Each structure stands twice: as C-alpha cells, then as structure tokens.
Image 1 (tube, rainbow, N blue to C red):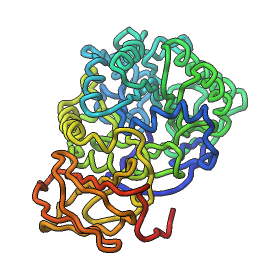
Image 2: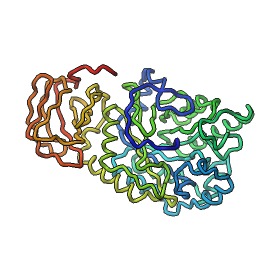
Image 3: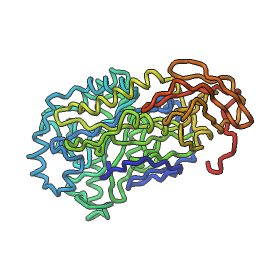
Image 4: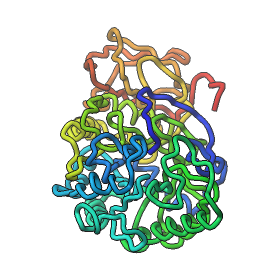
Amino acid sequence: MLAGCILSITIVLCGCRTNTPQSDSASEGNRVLTASDSARLAWYFNAHFGMFIHWGAYSVAARGEWVMNRELIPLEEYKEKYASKFLAENYDPGEWAEIAKKAGMKYVVLTARHHDGFCLWDTKTDEFNVMNYGPKKDLIRPYVDAIRDAGLKVGLYYSVADWHHPDFPAFVRNWPGGWESEEARQRFVEHYHSQVRELMTNYGKIDILWWDGSAPDGMEGEKINREVYELQPGILINNRNDEPYDFNTSEQKIVAGVAGRPWEACMTLNGNWGYHATDTYFKSPREVLQILIRCTSKGGNLLLNVGPKSDGTIPEESAEILMEAGDWLRRNHEFLDGPVERNRIGQHWNNSLVPTVRGNNVYLHFHNPPAGNEFCYSEIGNEVRSVRFLETGRPVEFEKVGHRLFLKNLSEFEKNTITTLVVEVIGKPDEAVRWTED
C-alpha cells in the first residue's frame, strides 16, 4: 500500500481512472455490465466485508511495510536482517480463515509480493523468495488451500513496484519518473508478468487479483490483465493496473464509484498496513462497524487490513476487535443478507444514523442513540408498513406525517453500541426530498 494513513473517514462520490500510478477512482465506471460480468460479480456484491493481510519480510522489522524504502535499507542488509529472519514459525492460515469467518468476512486478500519484491511463493523468476530465505517453504499454497477450505473467496495482492529489482527506479519518494532505458522497461515488465502467470497457474482457482504499487508508464497492464482473465476465467481484478478491470478500490477513505458498479474501500485496523509493534492506535469494534455500514450505504465493500507478526500470528488486539465486531454482525446480519443497493436515501446525511437499503427495507443504523424516547426521520418518501428493532424483533410504534416518520417509545437503545431499526416500506424505497447530487 501507499505510505501514510488517513485516520479520519472521508466519503467521496466519483468515477475512476485506471492507469498507474494507482487511483482511487475509475474511468470505466460507465461501462454497462454484461451478463458474464454480472455472473462473475454476483458473489462480490453479496460479500460486503473482507480481510486484507499485509505480511512479509517487513513484519520482522515491525515498523510497517515501507521500512525498506523509508530507511533506505540496502538490499543485502534487508535480506540479512529481515528476509532471513522471516521464519513464519507459527503460520496457520486456517486460523486466519477462522478469524475472518467469525468476523463476518467473506473473502481474504494476502500480499503475495509487496513493494520490497520479496515473494511468498516458490517462484522460478527470482531468488528473492521464501524458498531461499526465512521459512524455506511456499507460503501461498497453504494459504490458498485454507481459505478455500473455509468457504471463503481467495484473493492475492501483487505490487507492480519492486524496490529490489535492478531495472526498477527504487527508493523514489514519490511516483517513479521513468525507466533507465527501453530495454530495462521490457525486462522488468516480462519479470513481473512472469510472476503473475505463476500465481495464476500454480494455485488453482483464484477469485481476486488485487493490484497495487506505483510504477512508471509502460507497465503493459492491459496485456497481463487480459492474460489473467484467460488463465482464471472467473477472477475479479481491481483498478490499479490499467484496464480491463472489475471493481474500484479506494485507500483509507470511502470513495463510492458510479451506482451499479462494484467498489470497495480498503482500510487499516490501526495506523499501519504491515505489523508495527508500537502502533497502539486501533479502531474500536464500533468504529469498524461504522465504516462497514457507511460503505454498505453507498453500495460498496470494506476490505479491512490486519498485519500479522513475523511468526504468522494475528496480533491479539486485532483478533479481539474483529471478534467483537463479528459478534454484532451475527446478531444483526439481516441488512447484509444479499446485495445491498446504493439507494438515494443513503445519500442523505444525518447526525444520528446511517441508512442502508435492501429490498423494501430501510435499515436505520443509529451510531448515536436518540436523546429521548422519540425520533423523527424525514428521508423516506414511501408509505411505511412496519418498524422493528433488528436485533430483538420488537415492534416500534410509529406515525408518518407527510415526509416525517415519527418513531416512538424507543427504549432499547444502549450507549456505545450501534442499534438498528428496520423500516419496511410499500414499494421500492425512495427519498422524500430529492437530493441535488447523484
């Protein structure tokens, strides 16, 4: 991932561009989905929540995934201090899968290779891999098998940047400016294309290829993307290495793409992607749920990152947060049971709640409970059939006066948690007052 973390939540509605350097938006957003597209994307529209895993030699340094670049660590020093000591001695991807499932996640994406160029699989293209350093074994095979056996979708992250490769303009502090020569560009492109071919041919079905990394122009992303679709006909590709691709990705902020197009926001659980031993800023379970609900309200997914320690274990703090968030989702899962529409009601901000829409139900997720026993919500234009608490099913007394929906005798709200009411309406949910922006 890119260096630096934005700790506040920003919501942006826009389209997207596609070429590297990576972008948070996409120009292909207006393309009409074909029947084939819809079939491949069906599971993604139903997934809503995924686990991102940044893990590699940098986990030994325990100072984040950009340590090689930020500290200008020479390659041989990086190999000796970090790659060689990346032993993964307690690596159990089955445990990762169990944590993801208990958290309510439906897919997992692992960094097969980050910007440092260190490969977590038995690549034949480069000696800088786990067969020669650290664990001396392939780490991708057990990951793919464990995630698939758990019934989750399998994703592989691959960065087109490679600080260790002699042809790559390494250690730049911003976007790489250009290649030393056309021959250098061609060598590097063939190198990374060959690595991606290995990942797409040696590990069975892969559900997501998640591109990342800033690189100069001329990466021939379209060529390798089309080859990936041939090698993995059902795969989904994100928008960070040219067209064609399937879904848009934003980083550390919520950027909702064009309505009807798939998108996700990827965010860290603390302030770093890779493991950082002294980063104690963690989002609370409530904050995680708030972000997930905000993504859902705009019709998108949340890909939430954890950074395992070098031994392969997910930090206890991270696991506890995910378990608590997952416990709430198990009790309130209904609003995520199936595709969630990016409905116009969800574009109306409110100081107390965030709405999501599924079918003819509007779910009012109260992040801040009503100040009293009554609350007025004035965004639903439809007639209302019923209102109930999602978790308990208890009916809620209500009165609709014009556009104003008065909810009465609200006694089940608790502080410091999220309480959801389900408003069943007649017809397709629609806004009461037309919003001026799409």
